[in-house]
Image (cartoon, rainbow, N blue to C red; front, top):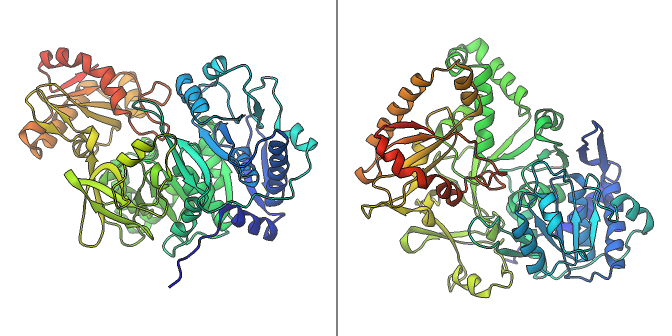
Length: 562
Protein backbone atom coordinates (compact mmCIF):
# COMPACT_ATOMS: atom_id res chain seq x y z
CA UNK A 1 0.00 0.00 0.00
CA UNK A 2 1.36 3.43 -0.97
CA UNK A 3 2.25 5.74 1.90
CA UNK A 4 -0.37 8.43 2.49
CA UNK A 5 0.86 11.90 1.51
CA UNK A 6 -0.81 14.54 3.63
CA UNK A 7 -1.58 17.85 1.88
CA UNK A 8 0.73 20.73 2.66
CA UNK A 9 -0.78 23.48 4.82
CA UNK A 10 -0.48 26.18 2.17
CA UNK A 11 -2.22 23.95 -0.37
CA UNK A 12 -5.04 23.44 2.12
CA UNK A 13 -5.44 27.19 2.55
CA UNK A 14 -5.43 27.80 -1.21
CA UNK A 15 -8.23 25.26 -1.66
CA UNK A 16 -10.49 26.96 0.87
CA UNK A 17 -9.58 30.41 -0.39
CA UNK A 18 -10.76 29.41 -3.87
CA UNK A 19 -13.95 27.73 -2.60
CA UNK A 20 -14.94 30.22 0.13
CA UNK A 21 -13.40 33.50 -0.99
CA UNK A 22 -16.21 35.66 0.40
CA UNK A 23 -16.90 33.62 3.54
CA UNK A 24 -15.60 34.82 6.91
CA UNK A 25 -12.45 33.05 8.09
CA UNK A 26 -11.11 35.16 11.00
CA UNK A 27 -13.05 37.27 13.54
CA UNK A 28 -11.04 39.76 15.59
CA UNK A 29 -12.37 41.88 18.49
CA UNK A 30 -10.46 45.12 19.10
CA UNK A 31 -9.93 47.02 22.33
CA UNK A 32 -12.09 49.92 21.09
CA UNK A 33 -15.11 47.61 20.89
CA UNK A 34 -14.99 46.92 17.14
CA UNK A 35 -15.32 43.34 15.92
CA UNK A 36 -13.84 42.87 12.44
CA UNK A 37 -14.37 39.88 10.14
CA UNK A 38 -11.76 38.87 7.56
CA UNK A 39 -12.82 36.66 4.68
CA UNK A 40 -10.72 33.89 3.17
CA UNK A 41 -10.13 36.14 0.17
CA UNK A 42 -9.02 39.10 2.28
CA UNK A 43 -6.67 36.92 4.31
CA UNK A 44 -5.08 35.52 1.15
CA UNK A 45 -4.76 39.00 -0.38
CA UNK A 46 -3.07 40.49 2.68
CA UNK A 47 -0.76 37.49 3.08
CA UNK A 48 0.40 37.72 -0.55
CA UNK A 49 1.02 41.48 -0.26
CA UNK A 50 3.03 40.94 2.91
CA UNK A 51 4.99 38.11 1.29
CA UNK A 52 5.92 40.57 -1.48
CA UNK A 53 7.09 43.01 1.20
CA UNK A 54 9.25 40.30 2.76
CA UNK A 55 10.79 39.67 -0.64
CA UNK A 56 11.46 43.40 -1.08
CA UNK A 57 13.56 43.33 2.09
CA UNK A 58 15.84 40.77 0.49
CA UNK A 59 14.56 37.92 2.67
CA UNK A 60 15.09 34.64 0.84
CA UNK A 61 13.55 31.21 1.52
CA UNK A 62 14.92 29.90 4.80
CA UNK A 63 15.40 33.34 6.39
CA UNK A 64 14.23 33.36 10.01
CA UNK A 65 11.57 35.85 11.07
CA UNK A 66 10.61 36.24 14.74
CA UNK A 67 6.90 36.80 15.43
CA UNK A 68 6.26 38.36 18.85
CA UNK A 69 2.70 39.02 19.90
CA UNK A 70 -0.49 37.77 21.49
CA UNK A 71 -3.04 35.81 19.47
CA UNK A 72 -4.74 37.79 16.74
CA UNK A 73 -6.09 37.41 13.23
CA UNK A 74 -2.97 39.08 11.86
CA UNK A 75 -0.71 36.66 13.73
CA UNK A 76 -2.27 33.95 11.53
CA UNK A 77 -2.03 36.09 8.38
CA UNK A 78 1.63 36.89 9.08
CA UNK A 79 2.40 33.20 9.58
CA UNK A 80 0.65 32.43 6.29
CA UNK A 81 2.65 35.18 4.53
CA UNK A 82 5.87 33.59 5.75
CA UNK A 83 4.83 30.25 4.24
CA UNK A 84 4.01 31.97 0.95
CA UNK A 85 7.49 33.57 0.92
CA UNK A 86 9.25 30.41 2.17
CA UNK A 87 10.47 32.05 5.37
CA UNK A 88 11.00 30.23 8.66
CA UNK A 89 8.64 31.51 11.37
CA UNK A 90 10.05 31.77 14.88
CA UNK A 91 7.16 32.57 17.26
CA UNK A 92 8.09 34.13 20.57
CA UNK A 93 6.07 34.15 23.81
CA UNK A 94 4.99 37.69 24.73
CA UNK A 95 5.99 36.96 28.34
CA UNK A 96 9.53 35.77 27.52
CA UNK A 97 12.11 37.56 29.63
CA UNK A 98 14.23 40.12 27.82
CA UNK A 99 17.22 37.82 28.20
CA UNK A 100 15.38 34.85 26.66
CA UNK A 101 13.93 36.97 23.83
CA UNK A 102 17.34 38.41 22.91
CA UNK A 103 18.86 34.95 23.07
CA UNK A 104 16.26 33.60 20.61
CA UNK A 105 16.63 36.54 18.23
CA UNK A 106 20.40 36.09 18.17
CA UNK A 107 20.47 32.30 18.24
CA UNK A 108 18.18 31.90 15.22
CA UNK A 109 19.89 34.78 13.36
CA UNK A 110 16.56 36.56 12.85
CA UNK A 111 16.41 38.92 9.87
CA UNK A 112 13.18 40.62 10.94
CA UNK A 113 11.12 41.08 14.10
CA UNK A 114 7.36 41.18 13.50
CA UNK A 115 5.49 42.78 16.39
CA UNK A 116 1.91 41.69 16.94
CA UNK A 117 -0.69 42.51 19.56
CA UNK A 118 1.24 43.92 22.55
CA UNK A 119 0.17 46.44 25.16
CA UNK A 120 2.82 46.18 27.87
CA UNK A 121 0.25 44.64 30.23
CA UNK A 122 0.44 40.87 30.39
CA UNK A 123 3.51 40.89 28.15
CA UNK A 124 7.15 41.82 28.55
CA UNK A 125 7.46 44.11 25.53
CA UNK A 126 8.73 47.22 27.41
CA UNK A 127 11.73 45.33 28.77
CA UNK A 128 12.41 43.54 25.49
CA UNK A 129 12.15 46.84 23.55
CA UNK A 130 14.72 48.55 25.76
CA UNK A 131 17.25 45.76 25.18
CA UNK A 132 16.87 45.34 21.40
CA UNK A 133 19.71 46.13 19.08
CA UNK A 134 19.06 49.57 17.49
CA UNK A 135 19.51 48.14 14.00
CA UNK A 136 16.94 45.33 14.33
CA UNK A 137 14.45 45.59 11.41
CA UNK A 138 10.85 45.50 12.62
CA UNK A 139 7.31 45.42 11.27
CA UNK A 140 4.17 46.28 13.23
CA UNK A 141 0.97 44.28 12.84
CA UNK A 142 -2.39 45.89 13.74
CA UNK A 143 -2.58 46.33 17.56
CA UNK A 144 1.21 46.41 17.86
CA UNK A 145 2.91 49.13 19.92
CA UNK A 146 3.65 52.29 17.95
CA UNK A 147 7.41 52.61 17.84
CA UNK A 148 7.97 54.39 14.54
CA UNK A 149 8.36 51.24 12.47
CA UNK A 150 6.70 50.16 9.20
CA UNK A 151 3.07 49.24 9.80
CA UNK A 152 1.05 46.41 8.27
CA UNK A 153 -1.77 48.40 6.63
CA UNK A 154 0.50 50.92 4.96
CA UNK A 155 2.90 48.21 3.85
CA UNK A 156 0.07 46.19 2.30
CA UNK A 157 -1.06 49.15 0.18
CA UNK A 158 2.45 49.67 -1.19
CA UNK A 159 3.01 46.12 -2.43
CA UNK A 160 1.18 44.12 -5.08
CA UNK A 161 0.33 40.54 -4.12
CA UNK A 162 3.16 38.06 -4.67
CA UNK A 163 2.24 35.92 -7.67
CA UNK A 164 4.76 33.08 -7.37
CA UNK A 165 4.26 31.17 -4.13
CA UNK A 166 7.09 29.22 -2.56
CA UNK A 167 6.90 25.47 -3.19
CA UNK A 168 8.81 23.85 -0.31
CA UNK A 169 10.39 20.43 -0.23
CA UNK A 170 8.71 18.20 2.32
CA UNK A 171 11.81 18.01 4.53
CA UNK A 172 12.39 21.77 4.34
CA UNK A 173 12.46 23.73 7.61
CA UNK A 174 9.12 25.47 8.24
CA UNK A 175 9.31 26.76 11.80
CA UNK A 176 11.53 26.89 14.88
CA UNK A 177 9.66 26.92 18.17
CA UNK A 178 11.69 27.76 21.23
CA UNK A 179 10.76 26.20 24.54
CA UNK A 180 9.87 28.56 27.36
CA UNK A 181 13.24 28.03 28.98
CA UNK A 182 12.10 27.06 32.49
CA UNK A 183 15.52 25.48 32.95
CA UNK A 184 18.54 26.89 31.14
CA UNK A 185 18.42 28.60 27.77
CA UNK A 186 15.45 28.02 25.44
CA UNK A 187 15.84 25.16 22.96
CA UNK A 188 14.81 25.66 19.34
CA UNK A 189 12.60 22.81 18.14
CA UNK A 190 12.78 22.54 14.33
CA UNK A 191 9.83 21.26 12.30
CA UNK A 192 9.58 20.58 8.60
CA UNK A 193 6.73 21.28 6.21
CA UNK A 194 6.11 17.54 6.08
CA UNK A 195 5.73 17.33 9.87
CA UNK A 196 3.27 20.23 9.81
CA UNK A 197 1.35 18.40 7.10
CA UNK A 198 1.32 15.28 9.28
CA UNK A 199 -0.90 17.21 11.68
CA UNK A 200 -3.59 17.21 8.99
CA UNK A 201 -3.45 13.42 8.77
CA UNK A 202 -3.49 13.02 12.54
CA UNK A 203 -6.62 15.17 12.86
CA UNK A 204 -8.45 13.93 9.75
CA UNK A 205 -10.05 10.98 11.49
CA UNK A 206 -13.66 10.03 12.11
CA UNK A 207 -13.59 10.40 15.88
CA UNK A 208 -12.80 14.16 15.63
CA UNK A 209 -15.05 14.82 12.66
CA UNK A 210 -13.50 18.24 11.90
CA UNK A 211 -15.43 19.98 9.13
CA UNK A 212 -15.87 23.34 7.41
CA UNK A 213 -18.78 24.28 9.68
CA UNK A 214 -16.75 24.08 12.90
CA UNK A 215 -15.81 27.11 15.00
CA UNK A 216 -12.89 27.57 17.37
CA UNK A 217 -11.70 30.29 19.74
CA UNK A 218 -7.94 30.99 19.75
CA UNK A 219 -6.75 32.16 23.15
CA UNK A 220 -3.93 29.88 24.35
CA UNK A 221 -0.56 31.21 23.12
CA UNK A 222 -0.03 30.67 19.38
CA UNK A 223 3.69 30.77 20.16
CA UNK A 224 3.15 27.31 21.65
CA UNK A 225 2.91 24.48 19.17
CA UNK A 226 -0.20 23.01 20.79
CA UNK A 227 -2.32 26.03 19.79
CA UNK A 228 -0.93 26.04 16.27
CA UNK A 229 -1.50 22.29 15.93
CA UNK A 230 -5.00 22.22 17.43
CA UNK A 231 -6.34 25.59 16.20
CA UNK A 232 -4.40 27.24 13.36
CA UNK A 233 -3.50 24.06 11.46
CA UNK A 234 -6.97 22.44 11.45
CA UNK A 235 -8.50 25.77 10.36
CA UNK A 236 -6.24 25.63 7.29
CA UNK A 237 -6.91 21.94 6.79
CA UNK A 238 -10.69 21.85 7.22
CA UNK A 239 -11.64 25.40 6.30
CA UNK A 240 -13.51 26.48 9.43
CA UNK A 241 -13.86 29.82 11.15
CA UNK A 242 -11.52 31.10 13.85
CA UNK A 243 -12.46 33.61 16.54
CA UNK A 244 -10.05 35.48 18.81
CA UNK A 245 -10.36 37.04 22.25
CA UNK A 246 -9.37 40.59 23.10
CA UNK A 247 -8.44 40.39 26.79
CA UNK A 248 -9.13 38.49 29.99
CA UNK A 249 -11.78 41.08 30.81
CA UNK A 250 -13.67 40.27 27.60
CA UNK A 251 -12.99 36.54 27.52
CA UNK A 252 -16.51 35.49 28.49
CA UNK A 253 -18.08 37.74 25.85
CA UNK A 254 -15.58 36.60 23.22
CA UNK A 255 -16.31 32.97 24.02
CA UNK A 256 -20.05 33.61 23.85
CA UNK A 257 -19.55 35.24 20.42
CA UNK A 258 -17.61 32.26 19.09
CA UNK A 259 -19.89 29.53 20.46
CA UNK A 260 -17.13 27.02 19.54
CA UNK A 261 -17.91 23.52 18.33
CA UNK A 262 -14.36 22.39 19.16
CA UNK A 263 -12.75 23.70 22.33
CA UNK A 264 -9.21 23.04 23.50
CA UNK A 265 -8.09 24.10 26.95
CA UNK A 266 -5.73 23.28 29.81
CA UNK A 267 -6.53 21.94 33.31
CA UNK A 268 -6.15 25.33 34.97
CA UNK A 269 -8.87 26.86 32.80
CA UNK A 270 -11.18 23.84 32.99
CA UNK A 271 -10.79 24.22 36.77
CA UNK A 272 -11.59 27.95 36.65
CA UNK A 273 -14.79 27.26 34.68
CA UNK A 274 -15.80 24.66 37.27
CA UNK A 275 -15.09 26.96 40.21
CA UNK A 276 -16.99 29.83 38.56
CA UNK A 277 -20.08 27.61 38.21
CA UNK A 278 -19.74 26.51 41.84
CA UNK A 279 -19.67 30.15 42.89
CA UNK A 280 -23.08 30.75 41.27
CA UNK A 281 -24.55 27.31 41.89
CA UNK A 282 -22.98 25.57 44.92
CA UNK A 283 -22.14 21.85 44.53
CA UNK A 284 -24.74 20.81 47.10
CA UNK A 285 -27.48 22.52 45.12
CA UNK A 286 -26.13 21.10 41.86
CA UNK A 287 -26.42 17.62 43.33
CA UNK A 288 -30.04 18.18 44.30
CA UNK A 289 -31.00 19.65 40.92
CA UNK A 290 -29.15 17.00 38.91
CA UNK A 291 -31.15 14.33 40.74
CA UNK A 292 -34.49 15.74 39.47
CA UNK A 293 -35.31 14.09 36.10
CA UNK A 294 -37.51 16.91 34.79
CA UNK A 295 -35.07 19.66 35.75
CA UNK A 296 -31.58 18.16 35.45
CA UNK A 297 -31.31 18.45 31.67
CA UNK A 298 -32.45 22.08 31.64
CA UNK A 299 -29.98 23.05 34.38
CA UNK A 300 -27.05 21.29 32.71
CA UNK A 301 -27.75 22.88 29.33
CA UNK A 302 -28.02 26.28 31.00
CA UNK A 303 -24.62 25.82 32.69
CA UNK A 304 -22.96 24.96 29.38
CA UNK A 305 -24.72 27.84 27.63
CA UNK A 306 -23.57 30.34 30.27
CA UNK A 307 -20.01 29.04 29.87
CA UNK A 308 -20.29 29.46 26.09
CA UNK A 309 -19.74 25.72 25.61
CA UNK A 310 -23.24 24.56 24.70
CA UNK A 311 -22.30 24.00 21.04
CA UNK A 312 -19.10 22.06 21.81
CA UNK A 313 -19.01 18.54 20.38
CA UNK A 314 -15.25 17.96 20.82
CA UNK A 315 -13.65 19.13 24.08
CA UNK A 316 -9.94 18.52 24.59
CA UNK A 317 -7.67 18.98 27.61
CA UNK A 318 -3.90 18.75 27.57
CA UNK A 319 -0.54 19.92 28.96
CA UNK A 320 -1.10 18.43 32.44
CA UNK A 321 -3.32 15.85 34.17
CA UNK A 322 -6.93 16.82 34.76
CA UNK A 323 -8.37 15.80 38.16
CA UNK A 324 -10.77 12.87 37.90
CA UNK A 325 -13.35 14.86 39.83
CA UNK A 326 -13.45 17.49 37.08
CA UNK A 327 -13.66 14.95 34.25
CA UNK A 328 -16.67 13.32 35.89
CA UNK A 329 -18.32 16.70 36.54
CA UNK A 330 -18.04 17.78 32.91
CA UNK A 331 -19.27 14.38 31.76
CA UNK A 332 -22.28 14.79 34.03
CA UNK A 333 -23.10 17.96 32.04
CA UNK A 334 -22.83 16.06 28.77
CA UNK A 335 -19.34 17.28 27.82
CA UNK A 336 -16.96 14.37 27.31
CA UNK A 337 -13.49 15.78 27.89
CA UNK A 338 -10.82 14.07 25.80
CA UNK A 339 -7.37 14.16 27.37
CA UNK A 340 -4.38 14.23 25.09
CA UNK A 341 -0.61 13.97 25.39
CA UNK A 342 2.17 15.27 23.21
CA UNK A 343 5.23 17.47 23.14
CA UNK A 344 6.66 20.31 21.10
CA UNK A 345 9.21 17.83 19.81
CA UNK A 346 6.53 15.73 18.10
CA UNK A 347 4.00 18.48 17.30
CA UNK A 348 1.73 16.96 19.97
CA UNK A 349 1.08 14.04 17.60
CA UNK A 350 1.30 11.32 20.21
CA UNK A 351 -1.75 10.14 22.19
CA UNK A 352 -5.40 11.16 22.36
CA UNK A 353 -8.57 9.84 23.95
CA UNK A 354 -11.42 9.06 21.57
CA UNK A 355 -15.12 9.72 22.13
CA UNK A 356 -16.90 6.78 23.66
CA UNK A 357 -13.69 5.01 24.64
CA UNK A 358 -12.34 7.34 27.32
CA UNK A 359 -10.58 5.70 30.25
CA UNK A 360 -10.27 8.18 33.09
CA UNK A 361 -6.65 8.38 34.23
CA UNK A 362 -5.36 7.64 30.73
CA UNK A 363 -4.39 10.06 27.96
CA UNK A 364 -5.68 7.62 25.36
CA UNK A 365 -4.13 5.55 22.60
CA UNK A 366 -1.50 6.43 19.99
CA UNK A 367 -2.62 8.69 17.17
CA UNK A 368 -2.33 7.53 13.57
CA UNK A 369 1.22 6.60 12.65
CA UNK A 370 2.52 6.88 16.24
CA UNK A 371 4.53 4.17 17.98
CA UNK A 372 5.03 4.29 21.73
CA UNK A 373 6.88 2.17 24.25
CA UNK A 374 8.24 2.24 27.78
CA UNK A 375 12.01 2.44 27.90
CA UNK A 376 14.59 2.40 30.62
CA UNK A 377 13.44 3.47 34.10
CA UNK A 378 9.84 3.68 32.92
CA UNK A 379 10.44 6.54 30.46
CA UNK A 380 7.91 6.99 27.65
CA UNK A 381 9.48 6.86 24.20
CA UNK A 382 7.54 7.93 21.12
CA UNK A 383 8.14 7.80 17.37
CA UNK A 384 5.76 10.12 15.55
CA UNK A 385 5.08 11.43 12.03
CA UNK A 386 5.36 14.85 13.68
CA UNK A 387 8.88 14.19 14.94
CA UNK A 388 11.14 17.23 14.96
CA UNK A 389 14.13 17.64 12.67
CA UNK A 390 16.10 18.30 15.83
CA UNK A 391 17.10 21.12 18.16
CA UNK A 392 18.44 24.10 16.23
CA UNK A 393 22.25 24.26 16.41
CA UNK A 394 22.27 21.55 19.10
CA UNK A 395 23.00 18.22 17.39
CA UNK A 396 24.45 16.71 20.56
CA UNK A 397 21.25 17.40 22.50
CA UNK A 398 19.18 16.06 19.60
CA UNK A 399 21.19 12.83 19.66
CA UNK A 400 20.89 12.52 23.43
CA UNK A 401 17.09 12.81 23.25
CA UNK A 402 16.71 10.30 20.42
CA UNK A 403 17.21 6.53 20.56
CA UNK A 404 19.26 4.76 17.91
CA UNK A 405 16.04 3.52 16.26
CA UNK A 406 14.44 6.97 16.11
CA UNK A 407 12.23 7.20 19.21
CA UNK A 408 12.10 10.47 21.13
CA UNK A 409 12.90 10.23 24.83
CA UNK A 410 10.06 12.25 26.38
CA UNK A 411 11.38 12.53 29.93
CA UNK A 412 7.95 11.48 31.20
CA UNK A 413 7.31 8.20 32.95
CA UNK A 414 4.25 6.09 32.31
CA UNK A 415 2.56 2.77 31.75
CA UNK A 416 0.98 1.30 28.60
CA UNK A 417 -1.70 -1.38 28.87
CA UNK A 418 -2.42 -4.22 26.46
CA UNK A 419 -4.74 -2.03 24.36
CA UNK A 420 -2.23 0.78 24.02
CA UNK A 421 -3.77 3.17 26.55
CA UNK A 422 -1.08 5.37 28.10
CA UNK A 423 -1.11 6.54 31.71
CA UNK A 424 1.34 9.26 32.71
CA UNK A 425 2.85 8.64 36.13
CA UNK A 426 5.12 11.68 36.33
CA UNK A 427 8.12 13.43 34.91
CA UNK A 428 11.49 11.87 35.59
CA UNK A 429 13.19 15.19 36.37
CA UNK A 430 10.41 16.15 38.83
CA UNK A 431 11.19 13.23 41.14
CA UNK A 432 13.12 14.48 44.16
CA UNK A 433 14.98 12.91 47.07
CA UNK A 434 14.17 13.70 50.71
CA UNK A 435 16.79 14.13 53.44
CA UNK A 436 16.23 10.46 54.28
CA UNK A 437 17.33 9.41 50.79
CA UNK A 438 13.85 8.42 49.64
CA UNK A 439 12.57 9.31 46.17
CA UNK A 440 9.19 11.02 45.80
CA UNK A 441 7.19 11.46 42.59
CA UNK A 442 5.07 14.60 43.10
CA UNK A 443 2.50 14.30 40.29
CA UNK A 444 0.46 11.36 41.67
CA UNK A 445 0.28 13.05 45.08
CA UNK A 446 -0.87 16.30 43.49
CA UNK A 447 -3.59 14.39 41.66
CA UNK A 448 -4.92 13.06 44.99
CA UNK A 449 -4.96 16.54 46.52
CA UNK A 450 -6.90 17.90 43.55
CA UNK A 451 -9.90 15.88 44.69
CA UNK A 452 -10.59 18.87 46.96
CA UNK A 453 -12.63 21.49 45.07
CA UNK A 454 -11.02 24.67 46.41
CA UNK A 455 -7.60 24.57 44.69
CA UNK A 456 -6.42 26.39 41.58
CA UNK A 457 -2.91 24.93 41.56
CA UNK A 458 -0.78 22.56 43.65
CA UNK A 459 2.93 21.82 43.91
CA UNK A 460 4.34 19.00 46.03
CA UNK A 461 7.94 19.76 47.04
CA UNK A 462 10.49 18.69 49.63
CA UNK A 463 13.90 18.06 48.07
CA UNK A 464 16.38 17.69 50.93
CA UNK A 465 13.64 17.94 53.56
CA UNK A 466 12.74 15.27 56.14
CA UNK A 467 9.39 14.67 54.38
CA UNK A 468 7.55 16.14 51.40
CA UNK A 469 5.01 18.92 51.76
CA UNK A 470 2.41 20.53 49.48
CA UNK A 471 2.02 24.15 48.41
CA UNK A 472 -1.62 25.01 47.74
CA UNK A 473 -2.94 27.94 45.74
CA UNK A 474 -6.59 28.44 46.67
CA UNK A 475 -9.07 29.40 43.98
CA UNK A 476 -9.77 33.10 43.55
CA UNK A 477 -13.32 32.62 44.89
CA UNK A 478 -12.04 30.84 48.00
CA UNK A 479 -9.38 33.48 48.62
CA UNK A 480 -12.04 36.19 48.36
CA UNK A 481 -14.43 34.30 50.66
CA UNK A 482 -11.74 33.98 53.33
CA UNK A 483 -10.78 37.64 52.94
CA UNK A 484 -14.33 38.96 53.33
CA UNK A 485 -15.24 36.54 56.14
CA UNK A 486 -17.92 34.55 54.30
CA UNK A 487 -15.71 31.46 54.70
CA UNK A 488 -14.28 30.86 58.16
CA UNK A 489 -10.51 30.34 57.97
CA UNK A 490 -10.50 27.90 60.90
CA UNK A 491 -13.18 25.81 59.20
CA UNK A 492 -11.15 25.67 55.99
CA UNK A 493 -8.00 24.82 57.94
CA UNK A 494 -9.81 21.86 59.49
CA UNK A 495 -10.96 20.75 56.00
CA UNK A 496 -7.40 20.86 54.72
CA UNK A 497 -6.05 18.99 57.72
CA UNK A 498 -8.62 16.25 57.10
CA UNK A 499 -7.63 16.19 53.40
CA UNK A 500 -3.98 15.69 54.36
CA UNK A 501 -4.93 12.73 56.53
CA UNK A 502 -6.99 11.13 53.73
CA UNK A 503 -4.24 11.58 51.16
CA UNK A 504 -1.50 10.32 53.46
CA UNK A 505 -3.55 7.21 54.24
CA UNK A 506 -3.12 6.07 50.63
CA UNK A 507 0.60 6.90 50.33
CA UNK A 508 3.79 5.07 51.19
CA UNK A 509 5.28 6.23 54.48
CA UNK A 510 8.14 8.14 52.84
CA UNK A 511 5.65 9.95 50.53
CA UNK A 512 3.36 11.18 53.32
CA UNK A 513 2.94 14.95 53.43
CA UNK A 514 4.33 16.50 56.60
CA UNK A 515 2.21 19.63 56.19
CA UNK A 516 0.22 21.70 53.70
CA UNK A 517 1.04 25.35 53.01
CA UNK A 518 -1.62 27.77 51.78
CA UNK A 519 0.39 30.25 49.72
CA UNK A 520 -0.35 33.97 49.85
CA UNK A 521 0.68 35.18 46.39
CA UNK A 522 -1.24 33.85 43.34
CA UNK A 523 0.92 32.05 40.78
CA UNK A 524 0.90 33.54 37.31
CA UNK A 525 2.81 33.71 34.04
CA UNK A 526 3.80 37.27 34.96
CA UNK A 527 5.56 36.31 38.21
CA UNK A 528 7.23 33.31 36.61
CA UNK A 529 5.38 30.62 38.56
CA UNK A 530 3.39 29.39 35.53
CA UNK A 531 4.43 28.58 31.98
CA UNK A 532 2.70 30.34 29.06
CA UNK A 533 0.42 27.29 28.84
CA UNK A 534 -0.43 27.68 32.55
CA UNK A 535 1.48 24.68 33.88
CA UNK A 536 3.33 25.18 37.15
CA UNK A 537 7.02 26.04 36.86
CA UNK A 538 8.14 23.57 39.47
CA UNK A 539 11.74 24.78 39.67
CA UNK A 540 10.70 28.43 40.11
CA UNK A 541 8.13 27.55 42.79
CA UNK A 542 10.59 25.39 44.70
CA UNK A 543 13.29 28.07 44.50
CA UNK A 544 10.86 30.60 45.97
CA UNK A 545 9.39 28.49 48.79
CA UNK A 546 12.01 25.94 49.87
CA UNK A 547 14.00 28.49 51.93
CA UNK A 548 10.99 28.69 54.28
CA UNK A 549 10.73 24.92 54.77
CA UNK A 550 12.80 24.68 57.95
CA UNK A 551 10.69 27.38 59.57
CA UNK A 552 7.50 25.53 58.57
CA UNK A 553 8.79 22.22 59.94
CA UNK A 554 9.47 23.91 63.29
CA UNK A 555 5.82 24.99 63.56
CA UNK A 556 4.69 21.33 63.74
CA UNK A 557 1.29 22.15 62.21
CA UNK A 558 -0.58 20.10 59.60
CA UNK A 559 -1.78 23.24 57.78
CA UNK A 560 0.19 26.48 57.54
CA UNK A 561 -1.02 29.79 56.12
CA UNK A 562 1.84 31.70 54.55
